Length: 527
Image (cartoon, rainbow, N blue to C red):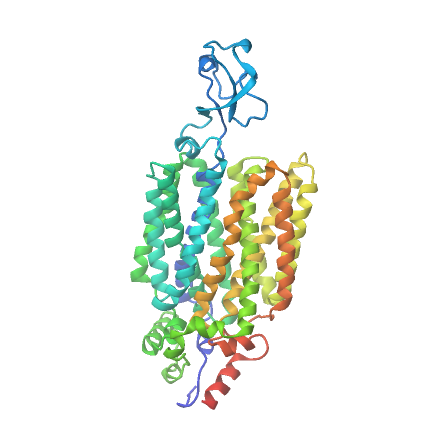
């Protein structure tokens, strides 16, 4: 194929020649998916680290007679005191007459069932909000980080935005294991979450790596690796029960990101959007050589790229469109709902019957069939209808779950995991749908902004177990109602399938209506 100097070639036309199972792309996808593998452990670390630990009041005069954690003496503490109150006593003897049951006073010392737990070491008895706040501060950190990570990725490139946070996660994550006070730990948790999340730039790099027809297939790799990270997380928690050693184990692999400086390439699409056509051309030729494909260099010379002046005002240009703003607000509803439901189901899995580590592992593994189903369903039915149905289905399942009697263990647990299956399908669909709605020069910024503001859901999710004090089924009823409401908003966005990614606001406004390549060529001919 020979192109004239006046012809403009869309990058997707070149990427289509490579496929998704070529040598270069397989290597690149495995490197990118390592970020999701680590995230599968890091994003829910607090569920195991700051897990609930039973405790009771220390009754000094009775401790010598108590061999087990549970006290057999009902006359020392009020019923339903939750280990926080005891009856007053001025006696040094442990008899019913030694305690004044008409006077209740707060405990000043406690005995923990697991003395080396996070709760015990930081003395968090009767302060459950501090324990759940670890998850909340992690989500707040993720939100803060995503506000600048997207713009950082759009400015310095996808590669650097993957490496720097990856190493930051390792440094701050391991540092957490040496925290000597609760405040010190909380501060490090915030820094680790704020500076150590590289999933957004990794996902965008994956999206920009392949032709639009293959975006969904690579999503399987990412979701499978994230699920395997969750399985390893469960196994590590079972084999390494001490929380400090557990934290060191799950964060140490992130040190490998230092090698990415030497073995990972930048996004071709990002290079073109920044006007670095020469570097982009060299990278495409390198890809072609590894994949044993011949590319016409004249074709590469005519690859279209955005004007640098436009890039300097990327977000301003994006938000100048009322159509794009409307879609952005809808994406915020999707993300907030997905993070609230997904993380809420994770933090409440400890309430299920059976072994908690096995339940975590099963829940992580359920993400794999959900991701595979997502790919094939979206290939056949595009994006809009599957997302609508999955939101509604997840909501209905969450509303039905409280109606199943707890005696039916397999039924209730099965329905719970089914809800997780559908919520994973929904979240994965939202993740890729969002990346397709915005232009190249602000794609990572907009994707990260949606993810950041949407973290309001994951900020609230760790607190949902506290709602069971008022009504046991309240968390799942809340999940179900929000999911159904979010599903209805999908009716307001265009349906997409294999359209080329929009490179500017004009293309983003018209995405889903007609061929973007034709639009871009007409726009350039007018210029």
